Structures are given as structure tokens and as C-alpha cells.
Amino acid sequence: MTTPKSEFLAGIKAEIPITLGVLPFGLIYGVLAIAAGLPPLLAIASSSIVFAGSAQFIGAQLIGASTPGLVIWLTTFIVNLRHMLYSTSLAPHTKHLSRPWKWLLAYLLTDEAYVVTALHYQNKGVPETYKHYFWTGSGITLWITWQLSTAAGVFFGTQVPASWSLDFTLALTFIGMVVPLCHERPNLAAALAAGIVAILTFGWPYRLGLMAAALSGIIAGILVEKYRYRKLS
Amino acid sequence: MNLWLIIIGMGVITYVIRLSMIVVSGQIQISDNIQRALRYVPPAVLSAIIVPEMLQPGGTLDISLGNERLLAGLIAIAVAWFTKNLLWTVTIGMISLWILQTIT
Image (cartoon, rainbow over all chains, first blue to last red; front, side, top):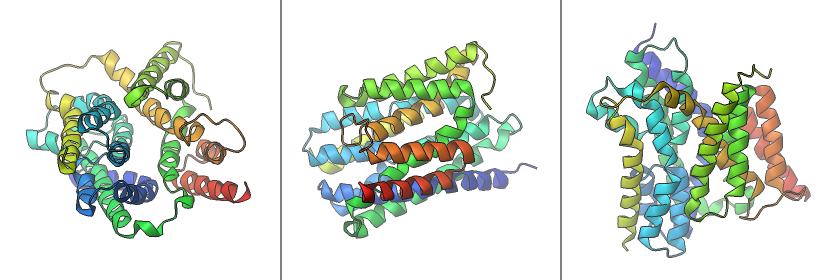
């Protein structure tokens, strides 16, 4: 039987493997933020104020390069525009919820929590009533991981050599999340198209290419779905 | 500009984007076609983040055997395809990268 508690625990359980890749990434963010000249307190606070890994990374780099604040905000907006897709995608499942619930869930809507939640919501068997507890469980698990790992990076990060390449763990985590989806052909088409367009648009300013790539991938997925390909394997 | 102000601004922008469609979810209807299309958001967005990390590690396109992140990434993709297991993917991918960095 599904209860708030069982959904909450299921969300935590689904998120835990992802934290393995996020931990080292958070550590590296802590190091980078200090190197970029952020005061330690601000570097730690930014993980709960912004709570968006890639935007924080780029933001710290831009701050280190003395970029004007308005440009940093514009870049943040474009880099995080993909979250509007997440917001649109999960919004129908939040209709019945109170405002405070919506505010909390929106705060927890990161890449990592979104993917596990969206996949969980695709199971038709999950009752609408308690779904948001799954989202909360996965979101809070990621939040705690992110706070602890970035703080650890701020305090102990100088002892982590750059040659360990720990920043690569996030890309590997995303590989582990996306590749299994690609056994279905429309998903494979979406991933391939997005990857190709991401490379072609890499030189675009303010990371605008990320959105172009995401939209191209979505269109490719729809087109392939229309041709009703069967499963690959 | 004050650094705190910059970070708070980044936080507000991020939060407003995340909240945008959720807060109006009771008032607007999202069509079935859009809902179906949005199922492709996870593969599309994740791939758009991964592929440049593999092919353009230093900011320039590098498709060669000297690009360890590309090779380690390809190994990780194979592991993920066959095992569908996140922990194996991350672990073997990282070990591959370390080995490749040592031998090149």
C-alpha cells in the first residue's frame, strides 16, 4: 500500500545512488568557489540560496573573472531555463497541492531530483495523492548531499588535487541516468539529437546552446515516436 | 556589485524559473501533446550536458584517442547500457579515467 511515508522513503532510495556522483562534484564546487574569491560563508550559503550545481559552477567562474553581475544573472537565467521544462512537466501533478507544498517542491526541483521523480511519475500505478512525498524525499536527499559536499569542499578542498578529475563524476552520473533510457528508440533519438546540437552550438554566448540542444532533442523524440518504432532490445 | 547580491539574485532567478509552471498549475491546462513531448526532457537535457563534457573537456572540440574523458565516457556508456546500474557506471567510468590519465 502506498502511504506518505512509503513514497518519501522510495524517493530517498531512488536518489541515493545519484548522490555518489554528486558528492565529489559538490566537493569540487567548494574548491572552485574559494579559488574564485567567494568568502567561505558565501560559498556555503550559495548552495542553499541557489541550489543549482551547474549554475553555481558557472557563476563562480564568472565571479572569478570579475564578470558584471547582470551578465552573471543573464547566464544563470539561460543555464537554468531547462528547469522551466521540468516545472512544466511536473506541474500537472501538483494541482491538488497547497501553496506551501508548491513552494517547497519548486525549491527542490533540481536535475537529479527531477529525473528520478519524472520517471517515478510515469508509472501509472502511483496514486496522485501521495506522489509529492516521493519528490520531497528525493529532493531533500539531494539537498543534504549538496550542502555537506560543498561545505566539505570549502573546508578541506585544497587537499583534493585537480588531477583526480572529480568534476567528471557528475557527467558519469548523468550517463548512468540517460543511457538506460536509450533502450527506447525515441529516447535514443532525443539524446543523440541533443548531443549533436550541443556540440554544434557550443560557441554560442551565455550557454544558449544548452536550450537549443534540449529543444532539438525533444523534437527528435517526438518525430521518432510518431513513426512508432518498437523497442530496441 | 556586492557578491552576496549577485548570489541572491542567482537564487531568485533559479527559484522563479522552477516555480513558474508549478504555481499556475491549478489555473492552466497543459495539453496532452505538450505533456507527451516533455517526456523527452530527461534524455535531451542530460545528453546536452554530457556530450560537451566528453568531447570538449578544455573548451575546444577534441575527438582523438588523447581525450581521456571521451574514452572514459564511452566506457561508462557501455557499462550503463548493459548493466543499467548507476553505481557501476560511475565507478568504472572514474577508474577508467584515472587509468587512462596515468598511461597517457
